[in-house]
Length: 408
View 1 (cartoon, rainbow, N blue to C red):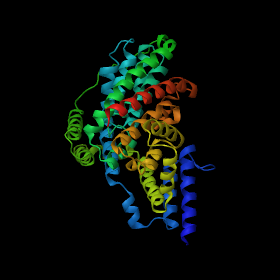
View 2: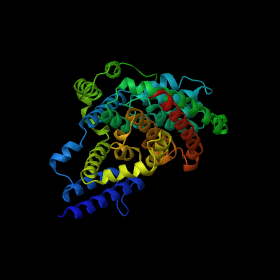
View 3: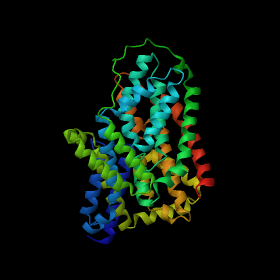
View 4: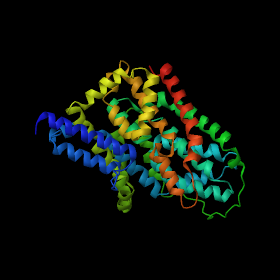
């Protein structure tokens, strides 16, 4: 196959892949983003844009290991009842006036240290149950869960999949990441509280007939060891140890100690997300190998993306167009070209994460919340948009200002 033909086919595969990432599925089929990432990677091999050596070079194994290890950690915590315990002993004990900030800060803080998608997956039905027991309209509290989990996950490398990728390829330390983006997450949660309190005031004031609870008070019996290991992993992160190694060691210990749960742990791992990452690494690797990435670098120069504010807005728009993980994967080769790469890595993490609050489809966490409660509660695109747009604009504006002045 000639070089020109390989180059043309690589462009076609790249454009088709990102087109599918934008609309969510391959038209006329049930192939989703993960499936398209796999198909696109295989096609790049088939046309000769990738070989075995370049494929191995394109994979970032630290990202994959850290992502898998965090999934195992959260799976064990879930199976041992951690999220039920948090909901029952923290959220459910608040009075109705403090329930909204309780949901925002509990989900935001959990999402900062655990992957936000799974926090939403496990907490959405629990928040719904608490609202029913307290006789409150659940919509504003479920919106709070989705938006706050996105905001809170901004704070650390382990908050969400795209931050895991950025932390790995940028080599920014866990404490460094937390120091610079943690304040944005905290301010953002207060903004979220204010926006929801103002725009959902009628729903928050609405009273429904309370439903009886199940009477269970929860137990820490099976949770002590997983919680101690989780705290040990977080401590390792904060002490500057390699995040992938620390998380993998913790996950390995949990697998040994909870071997009775091993099959259930496997079922809770999001294998499609891992397939998405592997496929994207290979597609972007082929794009770099065939010169497609260089074309994007030249385009970026013409768009003045070296301006932090313009860059953040561009990331926000791209993240909502093709989803945040594919957006970050596409831009990871651009950021090292900037004069202050450290600042722009942080801006990439901030904007790609907070961009998820713009619409229901802006992040997987939002979709998880909406779909999990759909049989009992309907959250419309408009319901989310009313809260998501101002929250996104305000938090990203704060993020741009903060990073400009405090993350040099």
